[in-house]
Image (cartoon, rainbow, N blue to C red; front, side, top):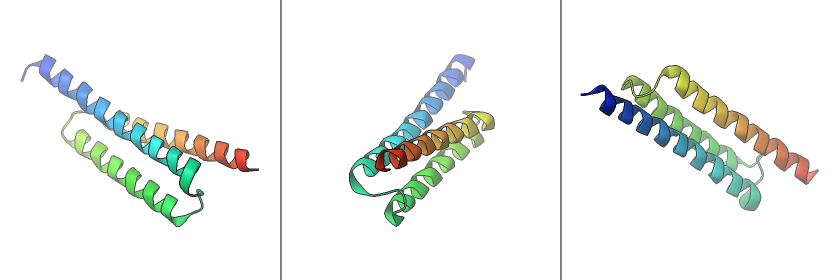
Length: 95
């Protein structure tokens, strides 16, 4: 495999993982805006399930050497920060 093809595959894997992280964030935004409170078991179950799934995708991409482990950790940490900020904003809005 040429290095150009490998680089393209790595970039594609990274883009897909970031898109999945964005989907989780959007799902949680919709849920917080319209359906349930963050203390609700449904909210927590959806969030835990989605986060676990993304972590498994990242682990798989790392094992295939499509992304570096540090990059995968960055994706998860960024998503966790964004979700935390979203949760704090929702709490402040309700107070």
